[in-house]
Image 1 (tube, rainbow over the protein chains, first blue to last red):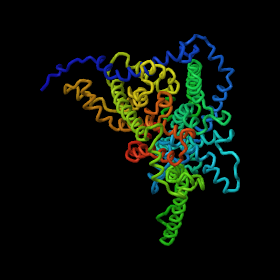
Image 2 (tube, rainbow over the protein chains, first blue to last red):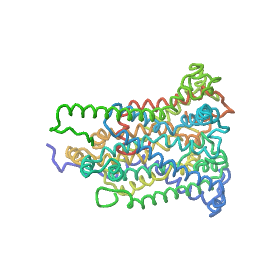
Image 3 (tube, one colour):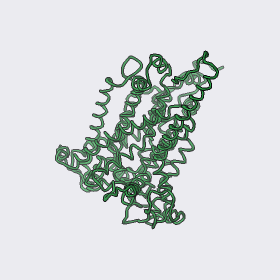
Image 4 (tube, chains in turn blue, green):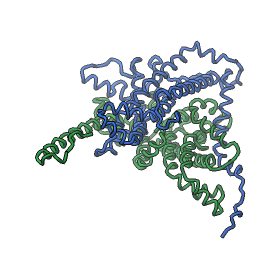
Length: 302
Length: 302
């Protein structure tokens, strides 16, 4: 038998840093250095060809007068504030529907979830472009129904963004799965005791189901909103930012500033404004959680 | 919650009546459920089926009865052959290969780097481990789109722009999301396992390879699948880091196919779009079980 004090005292610092080293290397190259560079560039005028010129706060001041900046901010907020609640609403609705003991539940779940895994691909954006574009499915069907359209949904500035919102809502599957798992966690005894008290299913839904789900709704709201602010591919492929900048999403605008006009300084400043917006948004949502998110443990927040 | 309860005192005749009533109710509710689920299912899957059907349609009749899922004139072989022929002197196989190399290396490297970092952060006592964990969480909050301008500039300095390694760089060193996921997972494993192995003379590395690694397998599978999806479907980074068709990924190639100035073959476009989705849906159908569990417990966005 081995002697207990034969256990060698290994150098945990060495092992720890050895194991962490790949991530640490990537963190330095892909995050820390870019971050400092980006902060620096945001105070310069830099077109990649000649060295950066220090311009102080010019880039940030310019944003206030830049109409495309405000337009992209407006469009992105509209997208996030309409798409995310709609997506969560459908996710919850369908999760409630599937939270039962019936046949083919697995098949339905799979069917509803597949759009979530392919939704962000270029291929699906291409499909969407053809579905709602000229001579597309939407126009053909409307024509058959006797309401022919002159302009396609994508060509019309007031409807173009709705096609992209529809694409976002179509991907409710992953939220649905999370809701479904949460629904199964709600103890049945809660419903039983409320039924004894004579509650109907609507009361059960508003007084038990929704409160019990609020932590998951909260979590989804934050995650999906942060993702929503990053919308890019859809705007780039389906509508190309148009018509009349009606789908000029923030990241798309940033991309154009950087790689079409080579305004690296200005786009870096825009990037930091986006980080601040996402940070502020997350902070505000976190602040509101005490008033509507219900945690079973009385200790309050997580 | 069924109000037609059968009481012991009820007479046999009434019992059969009640049973019938209950059965009818059951059938109606089950029918409503399946109809609703099917309608949603059709809406969810129609765009994908439509893409598949369009890839079978002849270019000339593609947009007559655009909504139809049955081709007027079939052109399967023509579409897939002409699509596979590619563009700018490279076949679509080349683009698939590029995507596969990037997704393969990025996923394997990324997941392994992540699990090593996760083990270090959750089980090894080394200096500043808390600080590094905080850094992981911070990178989780910063959208990659924001970093892409300085990342582009750094990769240019390193001479990696317009090469496949540039596309691997953001992934291969590990990803905050997977680190977080696996830290949570490892924290859930009983520490007594580590202690027992330590008694047997295993060091921290030995414990990692012999005890922890096999136990984290479920989290590794989930991370692997999602990492593959994210890299395979990524469009933003290839769009910025790659300019020569030689190194185009599938996403970039599809984007080029969409440009009417360089390509005007809808059949080929749909054929290759469909082809690009096959690995994604295939992996999903193979590993569905892990995915559904993974999403429900961690809330990964697909």
